[in-house]
Image 1 (tube, rainbow, N blue to C red):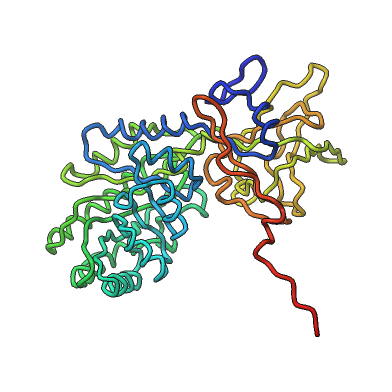
Image 2 (image 1 turned 60 degrees about the horizontal axis):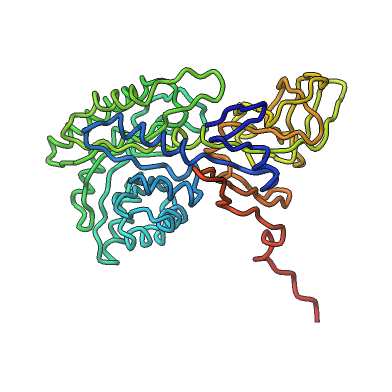
Length: 416
């Protein structure tokens, strides 16, 4: 939990300015306790109702985060062979893995079948045919759910909307029954469920209820066709409060799913952001203050390559000082910008702050889609990641070195 104590911003009782001094900035920091609390909130909300929670690895794939969730008994939702390898390295159980994603390659299918993943969420007829062929060649059977696209407006940013018929994800609802019939005829496929995911950062329960109502109509048609399933995967997408969002509770979200899905079906969910976003922050240091005729800039050592969400989505993150400024430092409205050579390189705009060079800041709610989307643009090493546990702060990913960025490259040989 982030809170001020004696004028210093702390995470689970540890002063963040000390963490910044120890590990340097920019630096990501996460709370193990916050991640555990969020996961248990979902688990408790289901009560005795059969359910499985599959953490969406794309939100934050750090091994310590995955290990924390695996120890709780979490499953995992993956979208690549690389994510599968990470989950296995973090001791996640293969049978508790759901493999989603529209572009699974042959090698990824082979990797997943060899590992024994629990379910493939199939997203197209072509993928279904490929999976059947690969499974037959390696002597395996693939358990599948068809991910359907219910054409429901998630009322979220268009880049993270996945449930409209204009999106690339899933099988159109009108085609789903025929895809299931085709799957039932394939010799290396076992049908076990139906899946649906309509988007991310949802702030209303209505789209979830609408999507599940449409999914259950399909489930009824499957039953009439003699195709039985055991689980309904409702996806993820519950949002968090970045600024002024008014959010439904996890309890109400789960109650909505339980009301829509009959008790004979196990409910699977794939939360990501809501498990890890609020647990994390990006720590950064003010390098320069710069004034132009129209703007006050605070140039910090973090940049869009470290946290791309503001540049990519115009996302808003709260900015908090790690320590209170001296009383004589005036408050001004600053744009927080980084050193990257792009005008889109900003972390926050028009924020009232009292700053001096060397001041350290926390960019809040950065535990999801932060480090995992970081890049090496401008040959910048990606920042370290630190996990705060009950007895201290631990480096769970070292800062990259510049030489590591080009270690796999080669110069051209000289002409003879």
